[in-house]
Image (cartoon, rainbow, N blue to C red; front, side, top):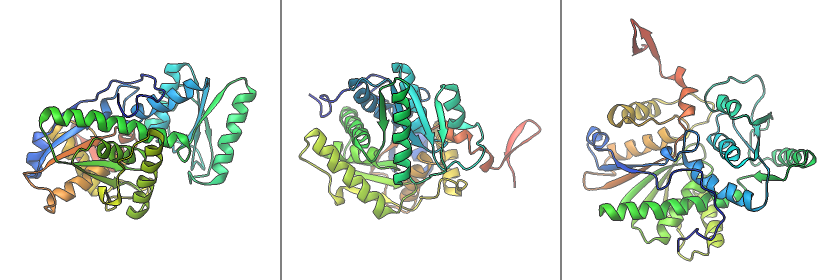
Amino acid sequence: MGLVDHLPRVRLGHFPTPLQEAPRLGAALGGPRIWIKRDDLSGLSVGGSKTRIFEFVLGDAAAAGATAVVASAGEQSNKLRELAAGANRLGMKPILLLTGVTGPTELAGNRFLFEVLGADIRTTPIADRFDPALKAELDRLCGEAAAAGHRPYLVYHPGRTGTLGAAAYVAAAEELTGQLGALGLGPVHVFIATGAAPTTAGLALGLRAMRLEAAVIGVSVAAPADEAKAQVLAYAERCADLLGIDHRPSAADVTIDGSQRADFSLPATPAVIEAIELFARTEGVLLEPTYTAKAAAGMIAAIRRGALGPSDSVVFVHTGGLPGLFAHAGEFGYGIDGGQASRRT
């Protein structure tokens, strides 16, 4: 029996996702052998890590008899896109509260897909996900949905749903352990984008529980490294309690790289743009600037400074987020000249 098999779950995606070697990427970097864990191919809407997470979160909602789901995040949130898609699959009404909105919004990337998916979209100028006023607004929307005859389920990361998100990546760690074993690989260095922290926490917890010799390197996308690490370890503890896992990651089991973090409102950095182009032009794999390309930039920097060499094996966890790439198209400096795309100088 698997570590998470006792939790409610609905099937929304295609698992296990592939573990693909990236030989041209490795050769271009002159470093270790690299494999990409393709959670971007998870199957719901345009895929990503949130498909895996919502199999458990929406499984919990379905077990509770929910007919509507309520959640908040930014205008380019992959979480909200996959939540709306999963809710539609299960016949639940998706109610999305977009945070940090102070004026008209551009229908691009995920923001456009919220409309295509038919979500009930609301906005708030509150940007901090931990602001009590945001929680109060979410509770108000739940009350409004209940008054309309729905049984609402609140998706709120600081609560139970964040712990369930970590549990989803304990399942991913079990899956990855089997794939690495079939290839005869180990030990490995695992790179992953670290945002709200449940994904990194679940991966670290699952790999520790499976006794896989792996170094987990979370590349923080926004928070300072010490803050992100504290969040990862806290989620891992809560998830271990939920699942009854005794072997838990310590501070030594998780490294947080804070070198790539940046405010989400800022343009993509040169390192992020380089990572996107390198993955695309060597392996045909598309990243996006907010999460995955920052993780890739952290991995690339580690290889170039000699922290990882030809004898090492690296797994890059591709958590998806493709629509966000289109929302940043203007930051790449490409122009159309005589029918050919070229970088403006």
